[in-house]
Amino acid sequence: MKFQTSITDVKTNGTERVRGKELTELIENNTFTQTIFLILQGRLPRDKEEQMMNAIFTSIIDHGPATTSALTARISASANNPMHCALAAGILGFGERHGVALEATMHFFYENVETSDVSLLLKSMKEQKKYAPGFGHKVFEEKDPRAEVLLKKAEELGFFGMHCKFAKSVHTEINKISSKKLPLNVDGAIGAILCDMGFDSRLGRGIFVIGRIPGLVAQVYEEMVQDSGIRRLDVDDIEYIP
Image 1 (spheres, rainbow, N blue to C red):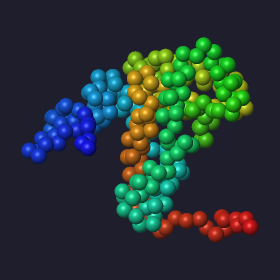
Image 2 (cartoon, rainbow, N blue to C red):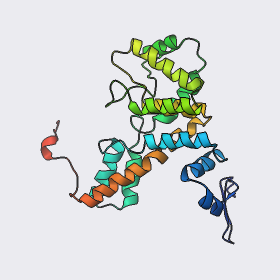
Image 3 (cartoon, one colour):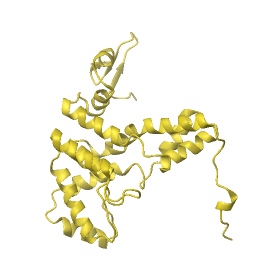
Image 4 (cartoon, helix red, strand yellow):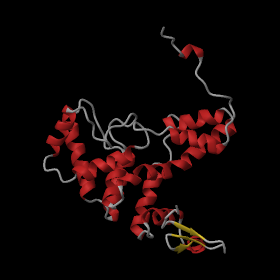
C-alpha cells in the first residue's frame, strides 16, 4: 500500500516541495515560523498570523529546569545519554498535568463556546468533578503574565474573537466558585487564540512541543556542559513503606 501525503514531495532529481512550495525558495524567502505555519495549515501565513505564532512560540520556549519535561531531560542527560535521547526523555515527560493541555483546552473551548450560561456549565462540571482546562497554575497563583501579554497581542492583531471572549468569561465565573485563585494560564490563552485562528484542536499538543523543543535543547546542553555527574535521589530522601 502506498503512502498518500500532501505534505512533502521529494524527487530523485534533487527537487523538494513542501505543501506545493519549492523548498529552495522557502529557504531563500521565508522564515521558520512561516514554514511551520505552511506545513501545518497548507498555506503561508498572513503577516499578522506570523506575528501571532511568533508570540505563541516565544511564550512557551522554556519554563525552567523544575518542569517535569526539563527535569526528565536533564536527568537523562546526566546519565551521559546523547542529546536526542535526552530530548526524547523530555518529550515523554509531557503529560496531562504538564505541557499537553492545549489539545484539551482547545476542545473545551470549541465544544462550549456557544453555551448560554457559563456559570451553570462550570457548576455542573464541578459537581461532576471535572475541571476546565487552561485555568490555574502551580507557580503563578494570581495571574499568568504570559497569558495576559498573549491576549493583548491577540487583540492588537485581530485574533481576539469568540473563543478568547469565552476564555475570559470562564475565568471570571470559575473564580466565583473556586476555593482558590485560578488564573487563565498560558495554555488557556494560547488555546483560545488558536481556536480563533481556526486551528484544529488535534494540533494543540504538537504546537506546544514545537515551541518547547528549543528550551529542552538548551536545558540538555547546559546539563552536558556542567557535567555535574548523574542526578539521582539521595537515600535520605526515600522513605521505605513496608
